[in-house]
Length: 273
Image (cartoon, rainbow, N blue to C red; front, side, top):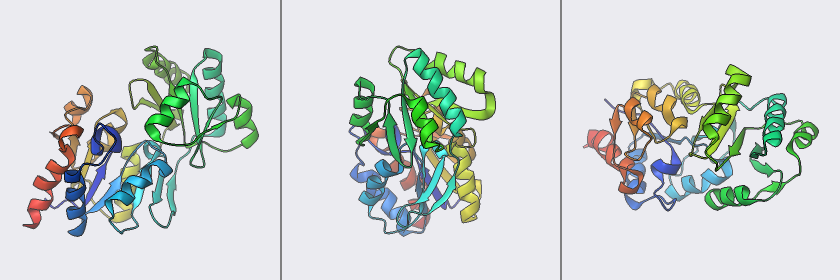
């Protein structure tokens, strides 16, 4: 099988434990692109915090990137928005109101900018791992009402082991109006129900006229699951959650051991030799 499209998650997958792209991963991707394979990064991150990694690869292409767990597809150079499925403002207000009543920290992402109620240990932690500026705007409910914009996503951060409980509450209250899933053990990501990596990858495949069986998708967490299931070759990292490994077609080495490169070398580059 000749694979024409590779979709790669960043954190825990393409990036190592220092949030860097290893030389081997970088070389494998570059060689695949040289041979005509299309690459898309598929991440929960903001566009602005993902684009430096794409530029580091020096691919010299203007291909789409999937951000916000599938809410946004945008080209990396021309910055053209191809697909956008934000969370409805009224839903965001309702969720923010619930979080405020329970005392949970919420990140609000609008226009590729990050807004929080106040700077605190949660916002500082997020800044440390995402390397992004934020704006403290006070209570989020009135902020969302005043701005009137539909957020790309909301992220609830909790370190007290309550993320699963919060997820259950939101799913019971909003049903299929939202998608809510864990990215990290203490992060609950809330998006439009149509904003998943799998649905975004499906849209992108149609845009490129590529069949699912011609796609490789790499991931490690719950937000990668439907993307891994959609792709003809769904690959879980060795460090992936058990449910993700069980659902994948293959399990590769961990993100610290160049797991992405190993699969590209064996399943893409060898086909050109």
